[in-house]
Length: 323
Image 1: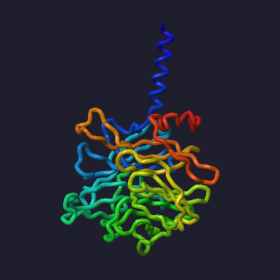
Image 2: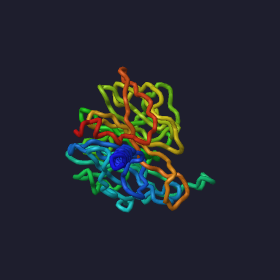
Image 3: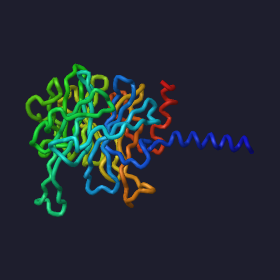
Image 4: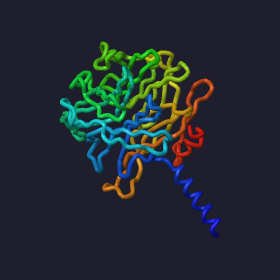
């Protein structure tokens, strides 16, 4: 009997270890919009937005960071920046991204002011812009060095910051009347070169938000939540296109789904967020939680569809041999 109980306990422990969706980023912490990056310290870093308990209509106040070397055990570094640190915005701390360049870490983020009146849109005063902050550490704190958004018009959010192999930095955004646009960052990362440039998307430009751009084997991938829900993608031979639509990565589930795709220790990982019932929460509604799945490519570079699982990447250490 003792042997059976021991075996059962081991099985339960293994199952618990592998049940990693959502990720164990912190008890009672609601996170979304994960931006994954591997920095010179060899760790995976996640930068996320932070849903406050029972928040009304995405009124969010800060951005958080987490790090891990096995994608199971995460160190929470707390809020690395807050709208309280800004002179030009006081709300809407939405989906961030990050980059490493010039020996510094950069946090690119959306923030804004005003109120959105969903019943009477004509009364809305909401505005959002894109900020850029710097730090000597991936754990922050990050400081807004320019004290202003990168531009005032058009209204913009959901930035994606991509550093190419030649060191040039490209910023992609979701913007009012300017989706599927890109602008190159200045070398010092404190301004942009010129204005937003419209990209050739091959004639297919559905409603979208939260773009993410990465490069693999010389091919550029522009990925996004199509219709704000379904993760889809394009490919191109340059970071500005022209782009060819390739199809679905992950189907919709509940509300919006922001994501990132990054390679770590030989494995490609899709970070995303789920809308889940949350036992013990103060509000009886689904809430957002960051999750992750393995992602695979076909020989021609196309992405295989990803299905949500309870296990997620819980066996990452076994897959990578503890590297």
